[in-house]
Amino acid sequence: MRKFAAVILALAMALSLCACGDSGVRTPNEPEPATAAPAETEPEEVKVEPPIEISEFSDPEDVPAPTDSGEYPEEALDESLAVTASDGRTYDFKWLYEHNVHDWLAAGIAFDPIDELSDAYLALPLTDDAIATMKQKISDFTELTFMGGTAEAGIKSVAPVITVGDEEYGLDWMSSHNATEYTEAGIDADIVSQYLEAIADYSYTREYRWIHVVYDRLVNGF
Image 1 (cartoon, rainbow, N blue to C red):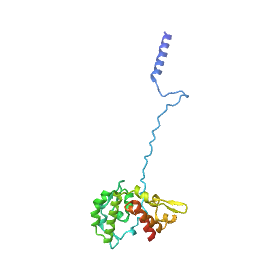
Image 2 (cartoon, rainbow, N blue to C red; image 1 turned 45 degrees about the vertical axis):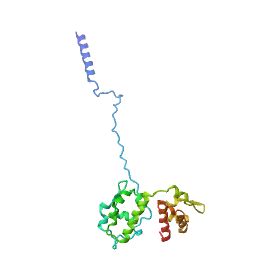
Image 3 (cartoon, helix red, strand yellow; image 1 turned 135 degrees about the vertical axis):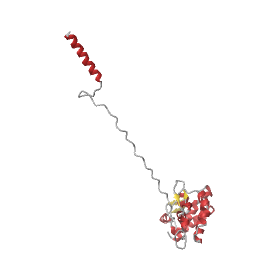
Image 4 (cartoon, rainbow, N blue to C red; image 1 turned 120 degrees about the horizontal axis):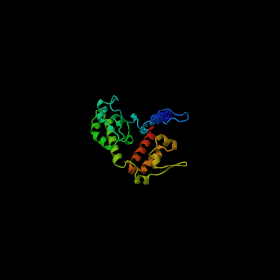
């Protein structure tokens, strides 16, 4: 009888140990269960828009003073006269007046908003010279956007190549470098004048107009 009771007690203890399952008691050599590490989140990349490349010819001194006092009237600085470029940036009348049409194009400004606001621009209380200047800018921008803003086959076929020493300078170089770089290359106003004569039939193109601005700088100082 005592033997039977001992067997029953042993079975009860065994069942008790099995029922405990994973009670947290482990042998010294048993490794701890792996726990999932918190997922690392990548830091959000901040995109910085590259600055707009503005030409060296964007100088308020290149245009007449807007008024006799040299200050802009309040009407000219009204937000309703600002235009929005393709990248979402806005440019007010003051910026437009003090920058050339190549800068307008570089900034991503389209023809339509300029066309819509042209009457308002020309009705501003500015000096006659300032109005004439803005009117010319609008006209030039119209030609630039509608009459071949980029080099076409015709101008490329007649544009000469300038040789100075061992270096050659073609249309692509001439229409993408400033007056300082012309001088450093040994290209003076006389050479540029002859170059402009050679491409005179394409005076409406961006390339001709840029080279002509450089020519003016070479003649008048820069």
